Image (cartoon, rainbow, N blue to C red):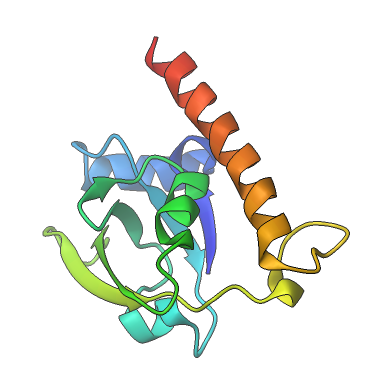
Length: 135
């Protein structure tokens, strides 16, 4: 699944979202979904806006990844706003365990512990950014 933060989306996409959902202030936009992926099995489609994950508001793609990171092989309830519907759609996704070959970093970590250290660093950066933006 490829995601875009709402604040980084193209103006035309944001305009469409604002017209359809003027009340949405948070969320991430799904650009595309790979066939056979957990997102596809859950029913997530392109142009969905993920606004909640297990009851928590989703503000950015890094935050969403953090929310599902420790829930591999577990059900996660995801709430999306879909352009074809005016009501929120609740979906259940089962996140796959992340394999070293699918990490988005170089060099590829040899084990999950190393990746967890990288992830905690990213998570701290997200928390600082969120705190700075809220100030």
